Amino acid sequence: MKILLSAFAFAPNVGSEPGVGWRWAAELAKRHEVTVVTDATRRPLVEAGGVQLPDNVAVVYYRPVWLRAMPLNSTTAQVLYTLWQFGLLGVARRLHRDHGFDLAIHITYGVFRHPSFLGYLGIPFIFGPLGGGEDAPLALKRSIRGREKLKELLRSLLNKTALFDPFLWAAYAKSKLILTKTEDTRQALPWPFRRRAIVYPEIGIDAPAGIQARARQPGEPLRVLFAGRLLGWKGAHLAIRAVAQAIAQGVSVEFTLLGKGPFESELRKVAVAAGIHDRIRWVSQVPQQELFALYRTMHCFLFPSLHDSSGNVVLEAQAFGLPVICLDIGGPVTLVTSETAIVVSTQNQNEERVVQGLADAVRGFAGDEQGRMAMSRAALEHVRGAMSWEKRAYGVFALLGQVTHGD
View 1: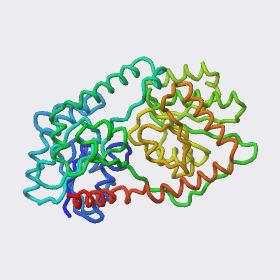
View 2: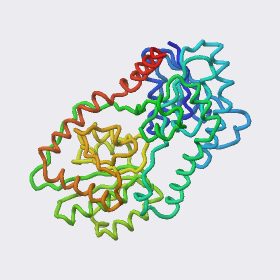
View 3: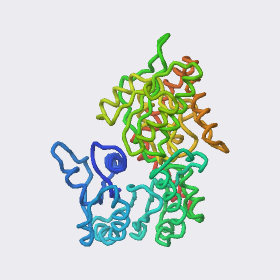
View 4: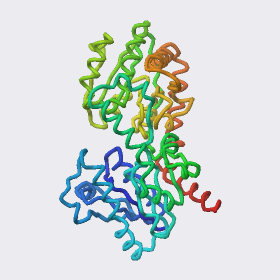
């Protein structure tokens, strides 16, 4: 099969969207010919010394002439990406005439608010997996302050206005298969397309070999880790308050908070107010191998994110045998099972009740080592099986077959 893969973000040896684009291309190319169309700014990363393009993958770098002066950064990315899509169809048609593709897939950026027009090539088109529709009730955002609060309100508004975008409706109408990363995003789609969209997380993991469940020794404190960007919606403020409650209830906890970002100063205020600032191990960003080494020293992973579409760190933590504590919203809950995580309900709950639920989960792990170890072993089995990269990519073909057969 010849596949055209649209991956605006595409780069090796990184996480997030570029890493997703790269891994999907690499996995699909194990059995098919893959042509990737990506933004021209990715060339230095893809062609850097020591980087080897996977077999059966060809890369086409593209940027419309009228966009070449626009830099790619956190401020311009969304606008640049949207405009890039409007020029892509002409390039894709020329490539299709030359190569005769059997299938087109849009993979990055994976945001439901932005259209793709590859469905107009006249071949089956898979749109997604898409995210971005994840959100938390306003009651759980009460303590997010400053610019982070404003960003949350703007994002919620954009998600609502996207429902009236005619280009988006056209993109969904031309899709043979629509995939969403979470149920939240499926429900955020324009209403005619919700029923035929399928929830399918887009990320997988290469589980490291030789990792075994690590027992907590008698008298050893429960070592709890949070890792992620320090943004308001990542939920680190809820994690701090939960750990403080657990400590106040007599639980012996060592809490490591790893990450950096614009919400750090506010998080430190939260920690001071909770009385545990000096009891938190504050760690800025570290190289991936140092993060992997840190996972090995921990007993559980606390990640109460409010609207992650995915959550690579949740898979990484399980790959190192860490049971997870997360909320029942967004991407993290799609990456765990009831055997690998304690999932705290947010349904009809305010912040105080959610924080109490997180604290109860921490206390539960501290007081039940046998149960924590069982979850640790289950986490290792989960990521080595259902969440491997190979199964993520090839599961899509089974879904496409079901849709085609249904037609």
